[in-house]
Length: 260
Image (tube, rainbow, N blue to C red; front, side):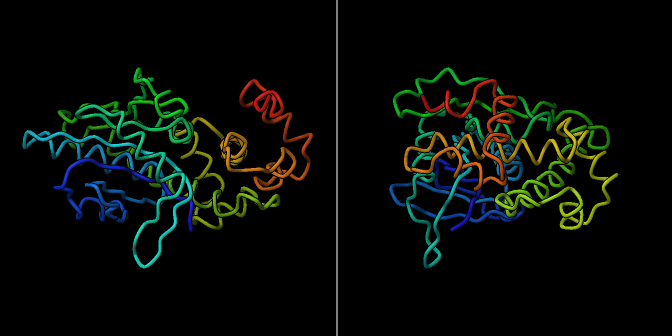
């Protein structure tokens, strides 16, 4: 079982080479439902954007939903977990040529060359949280050498490595910027510069933000019976009081108010 970015895709003509290019893996869930897993949200989104462009070129349409959560693979088959069911519902709300992402995905990719527009779909049909339509912020008509998207995609892959490292060490309260740099092979100065350009956050701010967003997701998970203190420990906060203080600063609401 792993925490992956899940993409539910419509249609039968899926370019597996494109999915492999972004280090994704495709699974068939039956009922013409295709699910792809990726190491992180940036790879998932950029794969869908490329796939969207390819389908439009041959007068076909893409509908995709993207979410982050636990998935279970057994005998090279994906099992229907809560996260898998959620991403299927997100895709069902997408119209032709739309890629819809959950709030969690959007929160992890600020200022990464992507445009997020609040979805006007009736997401209450499936009791889903806030959803967003994602588009490429930059035009493909720009010359290859001057298109800002190329640089941003490279930075996106750096962000993917950073997010994956943080996620793998989420419950380790001692996980530091120094350990993060060592894990991804960057100096602290390099990492500071790259993260500032892509997320406008320092490494420490990003680590804390990822922890808090994951904590919020756990608190809102109806199948998670852990209390606030347990969620704090699971996301790397040794002091529940400090966790609550950071949580309120990040979301302008305390964990207890969120659950009330």
